[in-house]
Length: 217
Image (cartoon, rainbow, N blue to C red):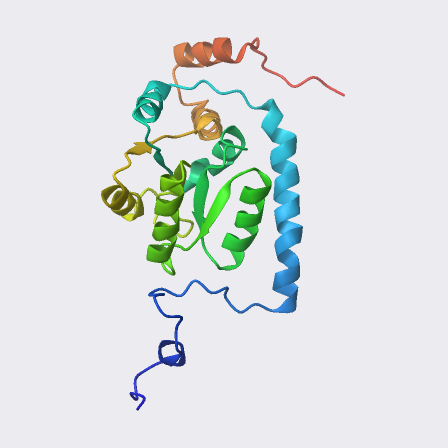
């Protein structure tokens, strides 16, 4: 008998052993057509801008210590840093968790084209099943990675997924961040309010001379 307050989704039979719904969300034909188009556009942007990026890696010895113990890393980072990470970590088979909704599906396509593995799940749907897949990949010798605050936020509020996976797998969690574009935005926003000495330091760091007027055409 069906309870009066039970929703249709809750009354649908599920595959045995599946405790979270990881099936693709129903989408219109137009939305399904958009997925490869958006994924292709994003991939082209990453491929165009990626070779211009330069990285200074700090603290890599922590990862090397993990690998020396014949373990794999559970990487976690904030969602806003994903662009720089997408290029830096390409073609290493790192497995990322992505959702079955519209944004997750085109993002998963881009990730796979960039040489990442994917596990289906999210912080709201299919999360535990996604963690099971990621634990299997750790056992297979692959690193895994999380956008720890998730695509829907709240920003800078960490979800429990990495800790749950570390507890079940015994693999260590390593946090990292790429935020050069954010740093440039913050410098630009504060440029005319910061002390002159700080502006000189930034000019020296960027390797350009000071100018006050834009050249006339």
